[in-house]
Image (cartoon, rainbow, N blue to C red):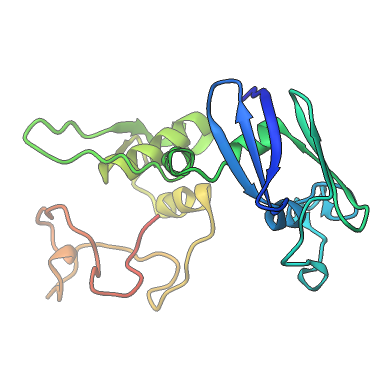
Amino acid sequence: MHCAIQKAEALDGAHLMQVLWHDGAESLYPAIWLRDNCPCSDCYLDSAKARKLLIEALDVNICMEDLTFDRKKVYITWPDEHYSEFEADWLKKRCFSQQARAKLQRELFLPECQHWGSELQLPTLDFEDVLKNDEHAYKWLSSLKKVGIVRLTGASHKRGEVLKLGKRIGFLYLTFYGHTWQVQDKIDANNVAYTTGKLSFHTDYPALHHPPGV
């Protein structure tokens, strides 16, 4: 993202900053939000990507004492002479407009979904590729998010394959079954899963508060 500032000015008694961008868009930022998100070394620990400014030190009625800008940055001086610089790209990415927020949500949460019909083709990936290649792992997860099901081929029949797959993306959740559960044919099975018959597509325990998922 390479954004250019056309104009920046203080509004509402310097409690609000308006930025006009070269692409014609407009953004508004509350002064208190800007002060709370000051990126200077006194207010922000870059190595931890975390704020250092204590909420008790934040004046909720704060306004900007002085505001200047160029194409790439906004420069703000606060009433206590604290000084903040905000890069154009950083500000544009955090625009509060409904359009910008909807765009960010689409990028972060991948809301697109594919509804199943007779034309459904199951996304298929190689098991070992998913384990060893980040691009294939991302394709697996994004396809699972969009379609709801992905077929992985090439896994061995030995125990531990599902365990490896789970550890590929995070920590396994411990349940009363353990970390994993071996599904196999049993005499006098108390569940159809423990027979040699085929199973239809299903989700286990959908009535639980936290059903299994990714």
